[in-house]
Image (tube, rainbow, N blue to C red; front, top):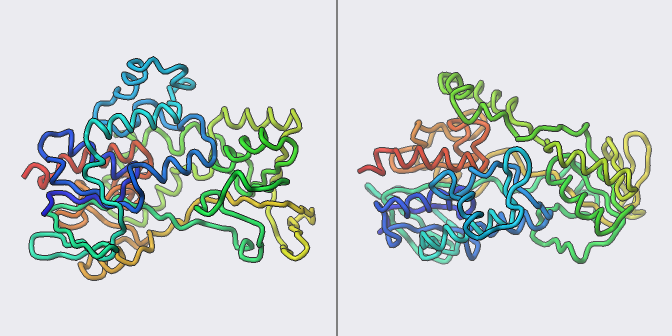
Length: 383
């Protein structure tokens, strides 16, 4: 019997787990973190390494520990060289990961780890019963669902093309791909990928975006982190309007200014080509892609940096839970929750599942911190 079971061991799940463990109110034996990977942040580390992201987009106070300046203090403690970049002190990815590992070790997060997947979840009296795919059954007083939709998004023509991979496809081995490359996408993932491959294969990389580059330092205005926008947002009870506000506020497919500058530097050096267009016709047999302007490309490898599906995760156990427990959802399919992020008594959500309450930053690292604050203040935690 557990006090807390957290489903998901990424940024969000590990942030709430760390806070619970460091609070002194919950012992490590009373927490279980269910995740299909072998340890904390494994998918995060795999994806950020895949695109060779040197620095985070978030500032240094956005991390998984409890104390706001914990990352800054850690960098000084270990004498980390060049820990931060730019005006907003964006941490290096390596520093962020080292700090996270240190925090997890201090909080004994790994001792509460359970490498498996959820198969079924249901209410049993005052407790939640969670069955996993390895045929184990766990009971808990409180549960936190901290997962996102990891279903990869592709353009419609991708089904007709055989020589392509999504950049976050687990089957992709970046050491085995061959040039010339055509990268599809115009956001931060596509740009990091293009920069990396342009250094490795200069002159053999083309980045194709449907739209001009959208340059924003953050993927939503910092005003969404506090009362400037959230006070008015929280007063709106129509969740269709909230969804529209989130859509308008989020700078989807955007990049920070320094990446924009790096792109143009690579173009001047002749290492990278950029095209604003989209593919209209496809022929895998002749290795031929044609744009709407009738320009033909014959890449050896197409890499789709086109993100993830926007809809709520299609994991069967969650859809069954929604139906069985009659959990309230908005027209967009996402949960309608209390201010405490409770979907129903003793069931909390984080990340994308909490964005109708937290707002546009819900999916980000700061969203994990904001969600953790609310859950830690809940009456269930205090009781």
